[in-house]
Amino acid sequence: MSETKEMLEATVKGLQDKVNQLNMDLKSKQKELEDVNKPTMPNDTYAVLEGLVNDAINEAVENYDFDNADQYEIDFSLDYDSRIQAETINLTDTYELVEKIVNKVQKQFKIEQDDETND
Image (cartoon, rainbow, N blue to C red):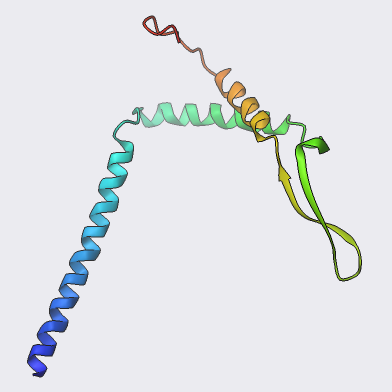
C-alpha cells in the first residue's frame, strides 16, 4: 500500500514538473508570438533611437502646463485634525499630454511618405 502511495506521489510530482515546464514553454511561445510582427533593428540603432525618443519625451513633459487646474479632478476630504486635504487628483486631459509627446517624438525623425498609400 505504501509503495502504491509513493508511486502515486512520484507520478503527481513528475506531472506537476511537466505542467510547470509546459507553462514556461507556453509563456515563451506567447512572447515569441507577440514579437513576430514587430520590426527589428540593430542594437546600436536602437540605442540612438532610444536617446532621441527619451529626450523628446522629457522635453514634452517638462514643457507641459501641469499648473492648469481645469485639467484635474480633485476629491477633497477632511483629515482627523479637520484640515482639508486632496484625497485624489486625476489628470483628465491626458490626450493633450500624449499629443505633445507624440509631436515631439515625430519631430525627431524625417518621415518618408509611402507612394502607394500616401501616408
